Length: 164
Image (tube, rainbow, N blue to C red; front, side, top):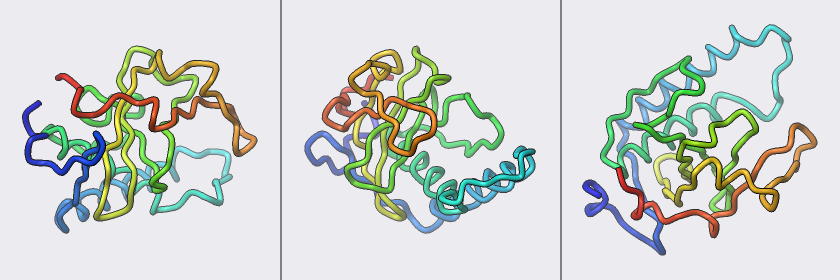
């Protein structure tokens, strides 16, 4: 895949370091998403664990995936279930050992990519088709909310194998 030859690989992972201007763009996208969420949430309740950093790091994770795959990053806001980068859905975890999370209403026919890290350093860990993620062995409910599929990194396909 073009674009990957210039990236650092470690056990099939792709290490990406965002430049300051890329982090700035991601920060603006994340801030817009957080503000958009304020206007959408009619319940008045906010998750105490969610803040600006969640949307900013998520957008930066998308930027890292776009950079790794050499795909234009549009930084869209308010597009919800549309793919995050190109035709791909991106999931982010700040934890290096984080899992790729897929929820009930996520598409079974789309590819989901896991990226971990914090600005400016990210690691694109791998990918999985939504249908393959939605297996009984991956179901967890660690926070007592709605159960979801938590796909461990060792169950993901190497990002270098992803074909456009």
